Every structure is written in C-alpha cells, then in structure tokens.
Image (tube, rainbow, N blue to C red; front, top):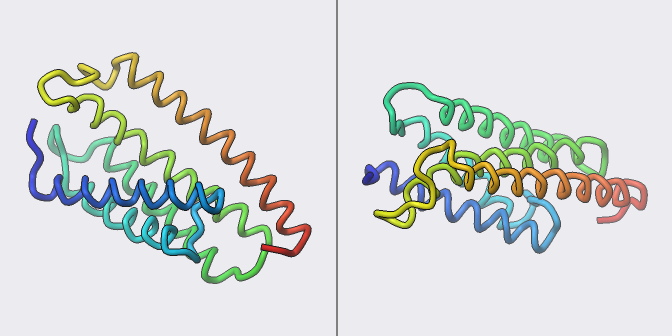
Length: 164
C-alpha cells in the first residue's frame, strides 16, 4: 500500500521525532524539553499528531486518531508543566511521565504500520493481530514501565538534592 503525500510527510517527521526522543533518553534519561532534542520531540510530536488526523487507511475516524489526540494532549500538558512550573518539584514527575507515555503511545501505531508494510512485498506481519506485533509491543511496554520507574527515582533524587 502506497503512502499519500501527507503520509510521507507524517512519516518523515515521525522518524525524526523518534530519533530526537531516543537521543534525549540517552543523554538525559528523559525527554528534556530544555534541550534541542526535547524541543524537536515536542514540536515533531505536535506535527505528527496533527497530520495523523488527516490520514486514514480504512476511512473515517479510527483508534489511530484517538491515539493522536491523546498524545497531543499529553505533550501539551507536559509543555505547560515545563513552562509554568519552574524548578525541581512534583510537576517534574508528571512532565516526565506524560512525555514518556506519549512516546510509548506513539509506538503502538508505529509498530503496527511498520510491521504490516515492511519489507515491501513481504511484511513482517500480515495483520495488526499478528503475534510479532503483540510481542514487540509487550517489550516496549516493559521498557516503558522500567524507564518510568527509573525516571521517578532519578527525579526524586534531583528534587531531594535540589540539583540538576
């Protein structure tokens, strides 16, 4: 199945956004909005969430659109907490969680779409119900849970020590 021009744009921005999030996780153990990688993630996620609303493989409003709206809400609330609640305080826990949760949620349609399309002609999965998709998403869920626990502990130490 070929991609529309909007689908191609959405995919390119999405790949850049995922890359920026991974860079931020490697450097800072979180999506840090004060840094370039965090800003790229924020703006890229807004763009991909909005462009996803114009894409529909099966026609009409679908679960992918719901994910896009939820992800958009999560990153906007995280940005609000980042910009309005300065300092190392409780709002950092929510900011970190919302950004990580938005990243996790973005993987659900990403894995589904990628595995049912690539490699072209012989995709890894025949349908969204294929076991390889479920197993991959389970690994991503476990990483999200472990990463969230790590971020919580790290933020607690930062808040307690008053440092960065």
